[in-house]
Length: 219
Image 1: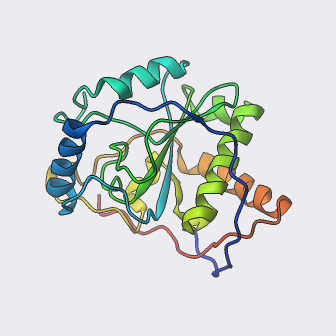
Image 2: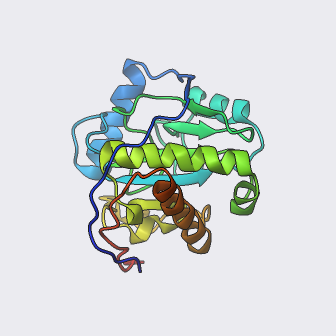
């Protein structure tokens, strides 16, 4: 469990981001709103005042394959139904950061948290493959720290997908989905990631909040 005192937040410089939008027209926005109504009781496709950042890995070695999957808007293969999956950012293996949708748009990347979470996909097939790639890891840390300071997101609310069920912001109205999560970014690896985030913040004199803590999963 992560528990700490509140620390003021100062801004951190925006890293270089390449705008590579996926199609997100009226039909997909309507599908996203219908998803939000069903799963969160929210009548909007918009992401407003996010409280969480979720780190993922793509389970492939290709930015283009990841982009094509998100752009196709095919129904989720695991849980079914529209809209298709997406994430706000993808960090390639060479450290290039791509943004796929605006930060005001809800993306389907983490059950129970899409209503309030920014999703970051990092190209790779394991946590270790990313932690061992300095250029990619630094880019991911800098992107995450910028988002933290922009939206006043505290360090404990930067989580791996596998930690979704212990987020205090997790909510899911569909009972059969409430315990669904993924194995990417295990807790032990996220401890390392958050430690590196804190070190980067200190090095850059960007103070961040460490308020909050994980909660007990109901699953």
